[in-house]
Image (cartoon, rainbow over all chains, first blue to last red; front, side, top):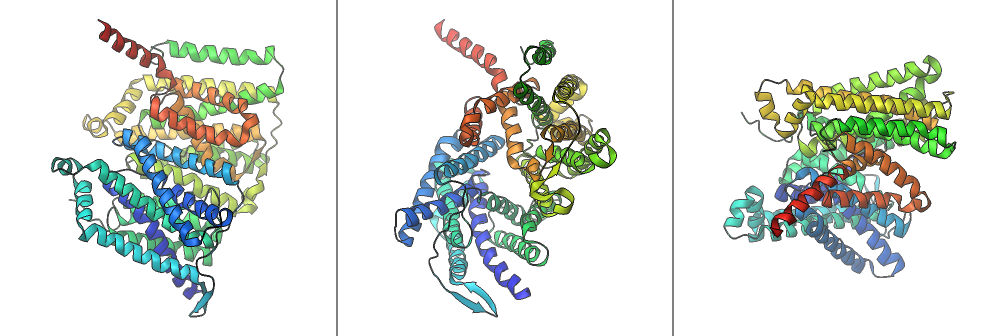
Length: 284
Length: 311
Protein backbone atom coordinates (compact mmCIF):
# COMPACT_ATOMS: atom_id res chain seq x y z
CA UNK A 1 0.00 0.00 0.00
CA UNK A 2 2.85 2.40 0.79
CA UNK A 3 4.37 1.75 -2.64
CA UNK A 4 0.98 2.45 -4.22
CA UNK A 5 0.79 5.74 -2.39
CA UNK A 6 4.32 6.72 -3.42
CA UNK A 7 3.92 5.84 -7.11
CA UNK A 8 0.48 7.34 -7.63
CA UNK A 9 1.44 10.25 -5.41
CA UNK A 10 4.34 11.06 -7.74
CA UNK A 11 2.18 10.75 -10.87
CA UNK A 12 -0.45 13.08 -9.45
CA UNK A 13 2.26 15.46 -8.23
CA UNK A 14 3.35 15.93 -11.83
CA UNK A 15 -0.22 16.41 -13.09
CA UNK A 16 -1.15 18.85 -10.34
CA UNK A 17 2.08 20.77 -10.82
CA UNK A 18 1.24 21.17 -14.51
CA UNK A 19 -2.22 22.53 -13.71
CA UNK A 20 -0.97 24.65 -10.82
CA UNK A 21 1.84 26.13 -12.90
CA UNK A 22 -0.54 27.56 -15.49
CA UNK A 23 -2.81 29.00 -12.82
CA UNK A 24 0.14 30.44 -10.92
CA UNK A 25 1.62 32.02 -14.08
CA UNK A 26 -1.40 34.11 -15.01
CA UNK A 27 -2.05 34.96 -11.36
CA UNK A 28 1.55 35.95 -10.72
CA UNK A 29 2.16 37.90 -13.92
CA UNK A 30 -1.17 39.59 -14.54
CA UNK A 31 -2.76 39.37 -11.07
CA UNK A 32 -5.72 37.58 -12.65
CA UNK A 33 -7.24 34.87 -10.53
CA UNK A 34 -8.63 32.79 -13.34
CA UNK A 35 -11.37 30.53 -11.99
CA UNK A 36 -12.02 29.40 -15.57
CA UNK A 37 -8.65 27.61 -15.57
CA UNK A 38 -10.33 24.33 -14.62
CA UNK A 39 -12.87 24.86 -17.40
CA UNK A 40 -10.00 24.95 -19.93
CA UNK A 41 -8.89 21.58 -18.60
CA UNK A 42 -12.43 20.23 -19.05
CA UNK A 43 -12.96 21.79 -22.52
CA UNK A 44 -9.74 20.24 -23.82
CA UNK A 45 -10.83 16.78 -22.68
CA UNK A 46 -14.17 17.19 -24.44
CA UNK A 47 -12.59 18.41 -27.66
CA UNK A 48 -10.34 15.35 -27.71
CA UNK A 49 -13.42 13.23 -27.16
CA UNK A 50 -15.25 15.00 -29.96
CA UNK A 51 -12.36 14.77 -32.43
CA UNK A 52 -11.55 11.13 -31.74
CA UNK A 53 -14.92 9.51 -31.09
CA UNK A 54 -17.09 11.65 -33.36
CA UNK A 55 -14.74 13.01 -36.08
CA UNK A 56 -12.46 9.93 -36.09
CA UNK A 57 -9.24 11.87 -36.16
CA UNK A 58 -5.94 10.44 -34.96
CA UNK A 59 -5.26 10.99 -31.30
CA UNK A 60 -2.26 13.24 -31.82
CA UNK A 61 -4.14 15.48 -34.26
CA UNK A 62 -7.03 15.59 -31.80
CA UNK A 63 -4.68 16.62 -29.03
CA UNK A 64 -3.17 19.36 -31.14
CA UNK A 65 -6.62 20.57 -32.16
CA UNK A 66 -7.76 20.61 -28.54
CA UNK A 67 -4.76 22.65 -27.41
CA UNK A 68 -5.18 25.21 -30.20
CA UNK A 69 -8.92 25.50 -29.63
CA UNK A 70 -8.46 25.97 -25.87
CA UNK A 71 -5.87 28.68 -26.50
CA UNK A 72 -8.29 30.48 -28.82
CA UNK A 73 -11.04 30.34 -26.20
CA UNK A 74 -8.67 31.58 -23.51
CA UNK A 75 -7.43 34.50 -25.57
CA UNK A 76 -10.98 35.45 -26.54
CA UNK A 77 -12.07 35.32 -22.91
CA UNK A 78 -9.12 37.45 -21.89
CA UNK A 79 -9.71 39.98 -24.64
CA UNK A 80 -13.46 40.31 -24.28
CA UNK A 81 -14.13 39.84 -20.56
CA UNK A 82 -11.06 40.11 -18.38
CA UNK A 83 -9.18 42.97 -20.04
CA UNK A 84 -11.87 45.64 -19.46
CA UNK A 85 -11.77 45.04 -15.70
CA UNK A 86 -8.31 43.71 -15.08
CA UNK A 87 -7.55 46.04 -12.20
CA UNK A 88 -10.59 45.09 -10.12
CA UNK A 89 -9.57 41.74 -8.69
CA UNK A 90 -12.97 40.91 -7.21
CA UNK A 91 -14.74 41.58 -10.49
CA UNK A 92 -12.26 39.40 -12.33
CA UNK A 93 -12.94 36.66 -9.81
CA UNK A 94 -16.71 36.89 -10.36
CA UNK A 95 -16.47 37.11 -14.14
CA UNK A 96 -14.13 34.12 -14.44
CA UNK A 97 -16.37 32.16 -12.09
CA UNK A 98 -19.34 33.03 -14.30
CA UNK A 99 -17.39 32.07 -17.42
CA UNK A 100 -16.42 28.74 -15.88
CA UNK A 101 -20.10 28.04 -15.20
CA UNK A 102 -21.06 29.17 -18.68
CA UNK A 103 -18.50 26.88 -20.33
CA UNK A 104 -19.65 24.02 -18.11
CA UNK A 105 -23.27 24.61 -19.13
CA UNK A 106 -22.39 24.87 -22.84
CA UNK A 107 -20.58 21.53 -22.64
CA UNK A 108 -23.50 20.09 -20.72
CA UNK A 109 -25.95 21.23 -23.40
CA UNK A 110 -23.81 19.97 -26.26
CA UNK A 111 -22.56 16.66 -24.88
CA UNK A 112 -25.03 15.83 -22.11
CA UNK A 113 -24.29 14.95 -18.49
CA UNK A 114 -23.24 11.33 -18.99
CA UNK A 115 -19.54 10.50 -18.49
CA UNK A 116 -17.45 10.10 -21.64
CA UNK A 117 -14.34 8.05 -22.26
CA UNK A 118 -11.29 9.20 -24.15
CA UNK A 119 -8.87 6.66 -25.67
CA UNK A 120 -5.35 6.39 -24.29
CA UNK A 121 -2.32 7.29 -26.37
CA UNK A 122 -0.51 4.22 -25.08
CA UNK A 123 -2.42 1.13 -24.12
CA UNK A 124 -0.83 -1.41 -21.89
CA UNK A 125 0.60 -1.48 -18.45
CA UNK A 126 3.78 -2.11 -16.56
CA UNK A 127 4.57 -3.41 -13.14
CA UNK A 128 6.62 -1.15 -10.94
CA UNK A 129 7.60 -2.78 -7.64
CA UNK A 130 4.45 -4.85 -7.78
CA UNK A 131 2.11 -1.95 -8.54
CA UNK A 132 0.27 -1.99 -11.82
CA UNK A 133 0.62 1.34 -13.61
CA UNK A 134 -0.79 1.98 -17.07
CA UNK A 135 1.58 3.28 -19.72
CA UNK A 136 -0.68 6.27 -20.19
CA UNK A 137 -0.06 7.27 -16.58
CA UNK A 138 3.70 6.94 -17.03
CA UNK A 139 3.51 8.96 -20.25
CA UNK A 140 1.53 11.64 -18.43
CA UNK A 141 4.14 11.76 -15.70
CA UNK A 142 7.04 12.19 -18.10
CA UNK A 143 5.33 14.70 -20.38
CA UNK A 144 4.27 16.76 -17.37
CA UNK A 145 7.81 16.80 -15.96
CA UNK A 146 9.27 17.73 -19.36
CA UNK A 147 6.72 20.52 -19.86
CA UNK A 148 7.40 21.95 -16.42
CA UNK A 149 11.12 21.94 -17.19
CA UNK A 150 10.47 23.62 -20.56
CA UNK A 151 8.35 26.34 -18.97
CA UNK A 152 11.02 26.87 -16.35
CA UNK A 153 13.68 27.23 -19.04
CA UNK A 154 11.44 29.56 -21.01
CA UNK A 155 10.91 31.81 -18.03
CA UNK A 156 14.42 31.84 -16.67
CA UNK A 157 16.71 31.55 -19.69
CA UNK A 158 15.09 33.22 -22.67
CA UNK A 159 14.38 36.79 -23.62
CA UNK A 160 10.62 36.16 -23.58
CA UNK A 161 10.96 34.90 -20.02
CA UNK A 162 12.84 38.02 -19.04
CA UNK A 163 10.08 40.22 -20.42
CA UNK A 164 7.40 38.18 -18.63
CA UNK A 165 9.29 38.42 -15.35
CA UNK A 166 9.77 42.14 -15.83
CA UNK A 167 6.04 42.66 -16.35
CA UNK A 168 5.22 40.53 -13.33
CA UNK A 169 7.54 42.58 -11.12
CA UNK A 170 6.52 46.04 -12.25
CA UNK A 171 4.13 46.30 -15.17
CA UNK A 172 4.17 50.08 -15.25
CA UNK A 173 7.93 50.32 -15.39
CA UNK A 174 8.10 47.58 -18.02
CA UNK A 175 5.62 49.39 -20.24
CA UNK A 176 7.64 52.59 -19.85
CA UNK A 177 10.65 50.69 -21.13
CA UNK A 178 8.74 49.75 -24.26
CA UNK A 179 7.17 46.40 -23.37
CA UNK A 180 3.65 45.91 -24.69
CA UNK A 181 2.14 44.57 -21.44
CA UNK A 182 -1.17 43.69 -23.10
CA UNK A 183 0.63 41.31 -25.44
CA UNK A 184 2.57 39.80 -22.57
CA UNK A 185 -0.66 39.16 -20.65
CA UNK A 186 -2.19 37.63 -23.75
CA UNK A 187 0.85 35.39 -24.20
CA UNK A 188 0.79 34.26 -20.57
CA UNK A 189 -2.94 33.59 -20.79
CA UNK A 190 -2.37 31.43 -23.87
CA UNK A 191 0.53 29.60 -22.24
CA UNK A 192 -1.47 28.92 -19.09
CA UNK A 193 -4.43 27.67 -21.12
CA UNK A 194 -2.12 25.43 -23.14
CA UNK A 195 -0.75 23.89 -19.94
CA UNK A 196 -4.26 23.27 -18.60
CA UNK A 197 -5.33 21.78 -21.95
CA UNK A 198 -2.32 19.47 -22.06
CA UNK A 199 -3.05 18.28 -18.55
CA UNK A 200 -6.67 17.66 -19.53
CA UNK A 201 -5.73 15.66 -22.62
CA UNK A 202 -3.23 13.52 -20.74
CA UNK A 203 -5.45 12.86 -17.75
CA UNK A 204 -8.74 12.34 -19.60
CA UNK A 205 -8.11 8.67 -20.51
CA UNK A 206 -7.89 7.58 -16.87
CA UNK A 207 -10.61 9.83 -15.52
CA UNK A 208 -14.22 9.98 -16.52
CA UNK A 209 -14.87 13.08 -18.58
CA UNK A 210 -17.86 14.99 -17.22
CA UNK A 211 -18.87 18.65 -17.50
CA UNK A 212 -18.11 19.22 -13.81
CA UNK A 213 -14.58 17.78 -13.91
CA UNK A 214 -13.04 21.26 -13.97
CA UNK A 215 -13.91 22.31 -10.41
CA UNK A 216 -11.65 19.97 -8.53
CA UNK A 217 -8.48 20.97 -10.50
CA UNK A 218 -9.13 24.67 -10.05
CA UNK A 219 -9.31 24.31 -6.28
CA UNK A 220 -6.26 22.08 -6.30
CA UNK A 221 -4.40 24.66 -8.39
CA UNK A 222 -5.38 27.39 -5.97
CA UNK A 223 -4.23 25.27 -3.03
CA UNK A 224 -0.89 24.72 -4.75
CA UNK A 225 -0.49 28.44 -5.34
CA UNK A 226 -1.29 29.21 -1.71
CA UNK A 227 1.12 26.53 -0.48
CA UNK A 228 3.93 27.21 -2.89
CA UNK A 229 3.71 30.93 -3.41
CA UNK A 230 3.49 32.65 -6.76
CA UNK A 231 5.87 32.38 -9.68
CA UNK A 232 8.10 29.84 -8.04
CA UNK A 233 8.56 26.51 -9.80
CA UNK A 234 9.97 24.73 -6.77
CA UNK A 235 7.18 26.05 -4.58
CA UNK A 236 4.63 24.85 -7.13
CA UNK A 237 6.20 21.39 -7.21
CA UNK A 238 6.31 21.19 -3.43
CA UNK A 239 2.71 22.36 -3.16
CA UNK A 240 1.62 19.82 -5.76
CA UNK A 241 3.46 17.09 -3.90
CA UNK A 242 1.79 17.95 -0.59
CA UNK A 243 -1.67 17.93 -2.16
CA UNK A 244 -1.08 14.77 -4.21
CA UNK A 245 0.31 12.75 -1.30
CA UNK A 246 -2.35 13.96 1.12
CA UNK A 247 -5.02 12.90 -1.38
CA UNK A 248 -3.44 9.51 -2.00
CA UNK A 249 -3.01 8.80 1.70
CA UNK A 250 -6.62 9.75 2.35
CA UNK A 251 -8.03 7.70 -0.47
CA UNK A 252 -6.00 4.61 0.40
CA UNK A 253 -6.19 4.82 4.18
CA UNK A 254 -9.55 6.45 4.93
CA UNK A 255 -12.11 6.84 2.17
CA UNK A 256 -11.68 7.73 -1.53
CA UNK A 257 -14.61 10.12 -1.38
CA UNK A 258 -12.96 12.31 1.23
CA UNK A 259 -10.02 13.06 -1.11
CA UNK A 260 -11.26 16.52 -2.08
CA UNK A 261 -12.32 17.39 1.45
CA UNK A 262 -8.72 16.84 2.60
CA UNK A 263 -7.39 19.11 -0.16
CA UNK A 264 -9.84 21.81 0.82
CA UNK A 265 -8.90 21.47 4.48
CA UNK A 266 -5.24 21.89 3.56
CA UNK A 267 -6.20 24.96 1.54
CA UNK A 268 -8.05 26.55 4.41
CA UNK A 269 -5.36 25.78 6.97
CA UNK A 270 -2.72 27.16 4.61
CA UNK A 271 -4.71 30.31 3.95
CA UNK A 272 -5.22 30.93 7.61
CA UNK A 273 -1.79 30.13 8.97
CA UNK A 274 0.52 30.68 6.02
CA UNK A 275 -1.23 33.03 3.62
CA UNK A 276 2.03 33.96 1.91
CA UNK A 277 3.08 30.41 1.17
CA UNK A 278 5.04 27.82 3.06
CA UNK A 279 8.39 29.05 1.86
CA UNK A 280 7.94 32.75 2.36
CA UNK A 281 10.28 34.48 4.69
CA UNK A 282 8.65 36.53 7.40
CA UNK A 283 8.82 40.23 6.68
CA UNK A 284 9.82 41.98 9.82
CA UNK B 1 -32.73 58.30 -4.14
CA UNK B 2 -34.05 54.90 -3.48
CA UNK B 3 -31.13 53.58 -1.53
CA UNK B 4 -30.56 56.48 0.74
CA UNK B 5 -33.69 57.77 2.43
CA UNK B 6 -36.74 56.62 4.26
CA UNK B 7 -38.45 55.32 1.18
CA UNK B 8 -36.38 52.14 1.38
CA UNK B 9 -38.42 51.25 4.49
CA UNK B 10 -41.62 52.20 2.69
CA UNK B 11 -40.66 50.05 -0.24
CA UNK B 12 -40.00 47.01 1.94
CA UNK B 13 -43.21 47.62 3.89
CA UNK B 14 -45.23 47.94 0.70
CA UNK B 15 -43.65 44.83 -0.76
CA UNK B 16 -44.43 42.85 2.38
CA UNK B 17 -48.00 44.15 2.47
CA UNK B 18 -48.55 43.19 -1.16
CA UNK B 19 -47.13 39.76 -0.53
CA UNK B 20 -49.25 39.32 2.59
CA UNK B 21 -52.41 40.10 0.59
CA UNK B 22 -51.66 37.56 -2.13
CA UNK B 23 -53.09 34.50 -0.33
CA UNK B 24 -56.37 36.41 0.14
CA UNK B 25 -56.66 37.13 -3.56
CA UNK B 26 -55.41 33.90 -5.05
CA UNK B 27 -55.57 30.44 -3.57
CA UNK B 28 -52.96 29.13 -5.97
CA UNK B 29 -50.89 26.58 -4.11
CA UNK B 30 -48.14 26.99 -6.65
CA UNK B 31 -47.81 30.76 -6.33
CA UNK B 32 -47.67 30.48 -2.54
CA UNK B 33 -44.89 27.98 -2.71
CA UNK B 34 -42.86 30.11 -5.13
CA UNK B 35 -43.30 33.13 -2.86
CA UNK B 36 -42.26 31.20 0.25
CA UNK B 37 -39.02 30.23 -1.44
CA UNK B 38 -38.53 33.80 -2.67
CA UNK B 39 -38.94 35.10 0.91
CA UNK B 40 -36.20 32.78 2.09
CA UNK B 41 -33.90 33.71 -0.78
CA UNK B 42 -34.47 37.38 0.02
CA UNK B 43 -33.17 36.68 3.53
CA UNK B 44 -30.16 34.82 2.15
CA UNK B 45 -29.40 37.62 -0.30
CA UNK B 46 -29.62 40.23 2.47
CA UNK B 47 -27.35 38.21 4.73
CA UNK B 48 -24.92 37.83 1.82
CA UNK B 49 -25.03 41.58 1.20
CA UNK B 50 -24.20 42.40 4.81
CA UNK B 51 -20.84 40.65 4.44
CA UNK B 52 -20.10 41.17 0.75
CA UNK B 53 -21.56 44.59 0.15
CA UNK B 54 -20.93 46.28 3.49
CA UNK B 55 -17.67 45.02 4.92
CA UNK B 56 -16.47 44.33 1.41
CA UNK B 57 -15.50 40.68 1.82
CA UNK B 58 -17.07 38.92 -1.14
CA UNK B 59 -18.59 35.70 0.15
CA UNK B 60 -19.03 32.79 -2.24
CA UNK B 61 -20.19 30.37 0.43
CA UNK B 62 -23.46 31.50 1.97
CA UNK B 63 -24.61 27.92 1.46
CA UNK B 64 -22.47 26.86 4.44
CA UNK B 65 -24.74 28.50 7.01
CA UNK B 66 -27.90 27.56 5.13
CA UNK B 67 -26.67 23.97 5.22
CA UNK B 68 -25.93 24.10 8.95
CA UNK B 69 -29.41 25.43 9.65
CA UNK B 70 -31.04 22.89 7.37
CA UNK B 71 -29.14 19.91 8.71
CA UNK B 72 -29.75 20.92 12.34
CA UNK B 73 -33.48 20.80 11.62
CA UNK B 74 -33.16 17.63 9.57
CA UNK B 75 -31.21 15.77 12.21
CA UNK B 76 -32.80 16.97 15.44
CA UNK B 77 -36.39 18.04 14.77
CA UNK B 78 -37.63 14.61 15.83
CA UNK B 79 -35.82 14.53 19.14
CA UNK B 80 -35.96 18.12 20.39
CA UNK B 81 -38.76 19.70 18.39
CA UNK B 82 -38.91 22.12 15.50
CA UNK B 83 -38.22 25.46 17.17
CA UNK B 84 -35.33 24.26 19.36
CA UNK B 85 -33.75 22.62 16.32
CA UNK B 86 -33.97 25.87 14.34
CA UNK B 87 -32.39 27.64 17.30
CA UNK B 88 -29.69 24.97 17.44
CA UNK B 89 -28.96 25.50 13.73
CA UNK B 90 -28.71 29.23 14.30
CA UNK B 91 -26.33 28.75 17.23
CA UNK B 92 -24.14 26.35 15.23
CA UNK B 93 -24.05 28.83 12.35
CA UNK B 94 -23.05 31.73 14.58
CA UNK B 95 -20.37 29.73 16.37
CA UNK B 96 -19.04 28.51 13.03
CA UNK B 97 -19.06 32.08 11.72
CA UNK B 98 -17.08 33.27 14.73
CA UNK B 99 -14.47 30.54 14.33
CA UNK B 100 -14.21 30.97 10.56
CA UNK B 101 -14.33 34.74 10.89
CA UNK B 102 -11.47 35.05 13.38
CA UNK B 103 -9.33 32.91 11.12
CA UNK B 104 -10.30 34.16 7.68
CA UNK B 105 -11.61 37.72 7.85
CA UNK B 106 -8.06 39.03 7.84
CA UNK B 107 -7.64 37.62 4.34
CA UNK B 108 -8.10 40.07 1.52
CA UNK B 109 -10.03 39.97 -1.74
CA UNK B 110 -10.03 36.68 -3.59
CA UNK B 111 -8.40 34.75 -0.76
CA UNK B 112 -11.39 35.29 1.50
CA UNK B 113 -13.80 34.52 -1.34
CA UNK B 114 -12.09 31.25 -2.16
CA UNK B 115 -12.06 30.21 1.51
CA UNK B 116 -15.79 30.75 1.76
CA UNK B 117 -16.30 28.96 -1.55
CA UNK B 118 -14.40 25.87 -0.39
CA UNK B 119 -15.97 25.46 3.07
CA UNK B 120 -19.43 24.32 1.87
CA UNK B 121 -17.76 21.87 -0.52
CA UNK B 122 -16.00 20.21 2.42
CA UNK B 123 -19.29 19.79 4.22
CA UNK B 124 -20.94 18.60 1.00
CA UNK B 125 -18.50 15.71 0.90
CA UNK B 126 -18.66 15.03 4.62
CA UNK B 127 -22.46 14.81 4.55
CA UNK B 128 -22.22 12.61 1.49
CA UNK B 129 -19.72 10.26 3.10
CA UNK B 130 -21.06 9.85 6.64
CA UNK B 131 -24.42 8.62 5.49
CA UNK B 132 -25.54 6.96 8.70
CA UNK B 133 -25.86 10.39 10.39
CA UNK B 134 -26.86 12.55 7.45
CA UNK B 135 -28.70 10.15 5.19
CA UNK B 136 -26.11 10.36 2.41
CA UNK B 137 -27.38 11.31 -1.02
CA UNK B 138 -30.98 10.48 -0.12
CA UNK B 139 -30.96 12.95 2.74
CA UNK B 140 -33.36 13.22 5.63
CA UNK B 141 -37.07 13.78 5.64
CA UNK B 142 -38.45 16.70 7.62
CA UNK B 143 -42.05 16.58 8.76
CA UNK B 144 -42.87 19.74 10.64
CA UNK B 145 -46.65 19.72 10.42
CA UNK B 146 -46.81 23.37 9.41
CA UNK B 147 -49.35 24.24 6.74
CA UNK B 148 -48.27 25.92 3.52
CA UNK B 149 -50.07 29.14 4.26
CA UNK B 150 -48.72 29.35 7.80
CA UNK B 151 -45.21 28.74 6.52
CA UNK B 152 -45.66 31.49 3.96
CA UNK B 153 -46.57 34.00 6.65
CA UNK B 154 -43.76 32.83 8.91
CA UNK B 155 -41.17 33.29 6.16
CA UNK B 156 -42.69 36.62 5.19
CA UNK B 157 -42.48 37.89 8.76
CA UNK B 158 -38.94 36.55 9.04
CA UNK B 159 -37.98 38.29 5.80
CA UNK B 160 -39.50 41.55 7.00
CA UNK B 161 -37.67 41.37 10.34
CA UNK B 162 -34.36 40.57 8.68
CA UNK B 163 -34.60 43.26 6.02
CA UNK B 164 -35.82 46.02 8.35
CA UNK B 165 -33.30 45.00 11.03
CA UNK B 166 -30.43 44.98 8.55
CA UNK B 167 -31.51 48.30 7.05
CA UNK B 168 -31.57 49.87 10.51
CA UNK B 169 -28.20 48.36 11.33
CA UNK B 170 -26.46 49.60 8.20
CA UNK B 171 -27.89 53.08 8.67
CA UNK B 172 -26.65 53.30 12.23
CA UNK B 173 -23.16 54.26 13.34
CA UNK B 174 -22.20 50.59 13.14
CA UNK B 175 -23.19 50.52 9.48
CA UNK B 176 -21.05 53.55 8.79
CA UNK B 177 -18.11 51.70 10.32
CA UNK B 178 -18.88 48.67 8.10
CA UNK B 179 -18.64 50.94 5.06
CA UNK B 180 -15.47 52.51 6.42
CA UNK B 181 -13.95 49.02 6.70
CA UNK B 182 -14.89 48.30 3.10
CA UNK B 183 -13.35 51.51 1.84
CA UNK B 184 -10.19 51.54 3.93
CA UNK B 185 -9.66 48.90 6.57
CA UNK B 186 -6.34 50.22 7.78
CA UNK B 187 -7.59 53.78 7.96
CA UNK B 188 -10.63 52.67 9.89
CA UNK B 189 -8.48 50.81 12.40
CA UNK B 190 -6.24 53.82 12.72
CA UNK B 191 -9.24 55.88 13.85
CA UNK B 192 -9.50 53.61 16.86
CA UNK B 193 -12.23 51.23 15.75
CA UNK B 194 -11.92 47.60 16.66
CA UNK B 195 -12.09 46.39 13.07
CA UNK B 196 -12.11 42.70 13.92
CA UNK B 197 -15.11 43.17 16.22
CA UNK B 198 -17.15 44.87 13.51
CA UNK B 199 -16.18 42.33 10.87
CA UNK B 200 -17.14 39.48 13.19
CA UNK B 201 -20.40 41.26 14.03
CA UNK B 202 -21.37 41.49 10.37
CA UNK B 203 -20.26 37.95 9.59
CA UNK B 204 -22.05 36.35 12.55
CA UNK B 205 -25.27 38.32 11.98
CA UNK B 206 -25.16 37.15 8.39
CA UNK B 207 -24.67 33.57 9.60
CA UNK B 208 -27.54 33.96 12.07
CA UNK B 209 -29.98 35.02 9.37
CA UNK B 210 -28.81 32.35 6.93
CA UNK B 211 -28.88 29.69 9.65
CA UNK B 212 -32.48 30.37 10.66
CA UNK B 213 -33.39 30.71 6.99
CA UNK B 214 -31.75 27.35 6.29
CA UNK B 215 -33.89 25.74 8.98
CA UNK B 216 -37.03 27.20 7.41
CA UNK B 217 -35.78 26.05 4.00
CA UNK B 218 -35.56 22.49 5.31
CA UNK B 219 -39.16 22.75 6.58
CA UNK B 220 -40.27 24.18 3.24
CA UNK B 221 -38.53 21.48 1.19
CA UNK B 222 -39.59 18.79 3.73
CA UNK B 223 -36.24 17.28 2.99
CA UNK B 224 -32.54 17.89 3.61
CA UNK B 225 -29.81 16.48 1.42
CA UNK B 226 -26.15 17.36 0.81
CA UNK B 227 -27.23 19.54 -2.13
CA UNK B 228 -27.95 22.39 0.32
CA UNK B 229 -24.16 22.78 0.45
CA UNK B 230 -23.99 22.79 -3.34
CA UNK B 231 -22.05 25.55 -5.04
CA UNK B 232 -25.05 26.54 -7.16
CA UNK B 233 -26.84 27.52 -3.97
CA UNK B 234 -24.15 30.09 -3.16
CA UNK B 235 -23.91 31.18 -6.78
CA UNK B 236 -27.65 31.79 -7.03
CA UNK B 237 -27.44 34.05 -3.99
CA UNK B 238 -24.43 35.79 -5.50
CA UNK B 239 -26.32 36.45 -8.73
CA UNK B 240 -29.33 37.79 -6.81
CA UNK B 241 -27.09 40.11 -4.83
CA UNK B 242 -25.07 41.37 -7.78
CA UNK B 243 -28.06 41.75 -10.08
CA UNK B 244 -29.91 43.68 -7.40
CA UNK B 245 -27.01 45.83 -6.33
CA UNK B 246 -24.29 45.05 -3.84
CA UNK B 247 -24.23 47.11 -0.69
CA UNK B 248 -27.80 48.40 -0.89
CA UNK B 249 -29.75 45.73 1.08
CA UNK B 250 -32.91 46.64 -0.82
CA UNK B 251 -31.29 45.69 -4.14
CA UNK B 252 -30.59 42.06 -3.20
CA UNK B 253 -34.17 41.75 -1.89
CA UNK B 254 -35.54 42.84 -5.25
CA UNK B 255 -32.96 40.65 -6.97
CA UNK B 256 -34.14 37.64 -4.96
CA UNK B 257 -37.81 38.14 -5.86
CA UNK B 258 -37.01 38.96 -9.47
CA UNK B 259 -34.77 35.95 -9.95
CA UNK B 260 -37.19 33.61 -8.17
CA UNK B 261 -39.92 34.59 -10.61
CA UNK B 262 -37.51 34.35 -13.50
CA UNK B 263 -36.69 30.80 -12.41
CA UNK B 264 -40.37 29.86 -12.39
CA UNK B 265 -40.95 31.59 -15.69
CA UNK B 266 -38.06 29.60 -17.19
CA UNK B 267 -39.30 26.35 -15.67
CA UNK B 268 -40.16 24.98 -19.11
CA UNK B 269 -36.60 25.50 -20.34
CA UNK B 270 -35.04 23.84 -17.35
CA UNK B 271 -31.88 22.63 -19.03
CA UNK B 272 -31.01 26.20 -20.07
CA UNK B 273 -31.62 27.63 -16.61
CA UNK B 274 -28.07 27.49 -15.27
CA UNK B 275 -26.78 28.67 -18.62
CA UNK B 276 -29.04 31.72 -18.42
CA UNK B 277 -28.00 32.36 -14.82
CA UNK B 278 -24.32 32.31 -15.71
CA UNK B 279 -24.97 34.55 -18.70
CA UNK B 280 -26.97 36.93 -16.52
CA UNK B 281 -24.10 37.16 -14.05
CA UNK B 282 -21.66 38.02 -16.85
CA UNK B 283 -24.01 40.64 -18.28
CA UNK B 284 -24.49 42.28 -14.89
CA UNK B 285 -20.81 42.31 -13.97
CA UNK B 286 -19.88 43.69 -17.37
CA UNK B 287 -22.63 46.25 -17.93
CA UNK B 288 -24.22 47.11 -14.60
CA UNK B 289 -21.82 46.19 -11.81
CA UNK B 290 -23.75 48.31 -9.32
CA UNK B 291 -26.97 46.39 -9.89
CA UNK B 292 -30.52 47.09 -11.05
CA UNK B 293 -31.17 49.42 -8.13
CA UNK B 294 -28.79 52.02 -9.51
CA UNK B 295 -30.35 51.98 -12.97
CA UNK B 296 -32.10 55.30 -12.31
CA UNK B 297 -28.90 56.88 -11.07
CA UNK B 298 -27.05 55.63 -14.13
CA UNK B 299 -29.72 56.99 -16.42
CA UNK B 300 -29.73 60.41 -14.78
CA UNK B 301 -25.95 60.49 -14.97
CA UNK B 302 -26.21 59.66 -18.66
CA UNK B 303 -28.82 62.36 -19.17
CA UNK B 304 -26.64 64.90 -17.40
CA UNK B 305 -23.75 63.93 -19.62
CA UNK B 306 -25.75 64.35 -22.81
CA UNK B 307 -27.23 67.62 -21.51
CA UNK B 308 -23.76 68.89 -20.87
CA UNK B 309 -22.82 68.08 -24.43
CA UNK B 310 -25.86 69.89 -25.78
CA UNK B 311 -25.24 73.16 -24.01
